[in-house]
Amino acid sequence: MTRRAYPSDLDDDTYHFVLPYLLLTPEHAAQRKHPLRDVLNALFWMTRTGAQWDYLPHDFPPPEVVRQQAARWFEAACFENMLHDLRILSRVQQARGAEPTAVIIDSRTLQSTPESGARAGYDGAKKRKGTKVHIVVDTLGHLLALMTTPANEQDRAQVHELCVQVQEVTGVKVEVAFVDQGYTGQQTALDAANGGVELLVVKRPEASKGFILVPRRWVVERSFGWLSRFRRLGRDLERLSSTLLGFHTVAFCLLLANKLFA
Image (cartoon, rainbow, N blue to C red; front, side, top):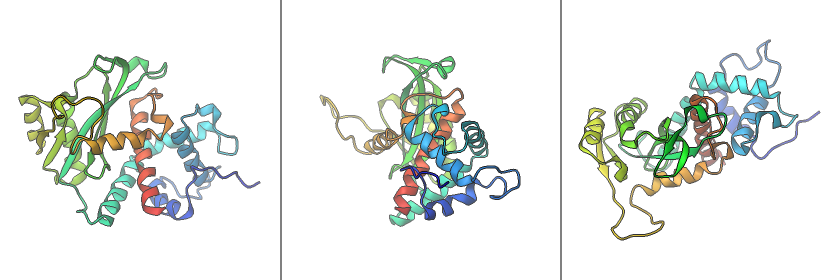
């Protein structure tokens, strides 16, 4: 019986591009009971819809099969490698250098759930208990680095680790990072400098109220807006922070693949 098509399914061109990044074993290995494409489409369906694993439609492979394969992909950094190449293709397509020299750093707090509550912290500014997701994007909004902390930890304390990650994925090309006022302080600037990055704080105009487009910083806010299309990322639904990071990377891969192959 032919499987029902879902809006989240990959088309042929996109699937043939992403397949080499995901082949931890041959596509038609004897031990494989379910088509790899179906497993991948099931993972994308989960990322888009945010449903519980047990509610995965029956015409996909069993939930436990998809969950276990996703964990193997996340552990092997398959989607990070895919995202790296998709980002380069997108930048070249837009007449940019393959690797960026300027980035934007920011974070958002995801509400905790019973699954993630054990590692949650309380964000006093957002009045929310949960997990902070710290991201670094280039000036086109493409993801470069990603990490999580309990929500009570300060943004500025993560700057060094984020800068180190960015330099690793770009080949030490990044020179400048734009940030908001939550990253002020001499120690924060020093942490960034130790990662080879100059930290530039972009402030909101004085006496401004409500939402405004802040130069440079609006790019990362747009990236957060893109992520809001993926219901799996609306809250911290994961028991492990590595799984939360994995779903974020999958989402950015989907965004770039749709942009390049649409």
